[in-house]
Length: 86
Image (tube, rainbow, N blue to C red; front, top):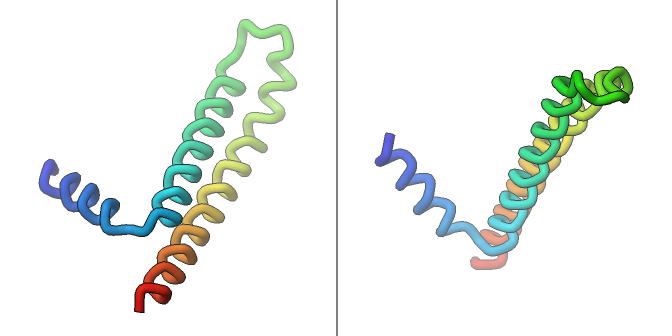
């Protein structure tokens, strides 16, 4: 397991700066949206509990969309950075 994490770390370091930036932005966005959706789903002590329940499913859909766009963007930046190196 440690060896696999070191391989991922070494692979991340070989990527270009724009690709790494896209990965960081995507990860931060997905984590924040997921935590917000979890809070919205479990906030039973909040007076606006029903409104939060309504938006929790929408937040999860947005999280999936951000993850897909981030993956496509990361692949795109990686491809363009490899093309400019040639």
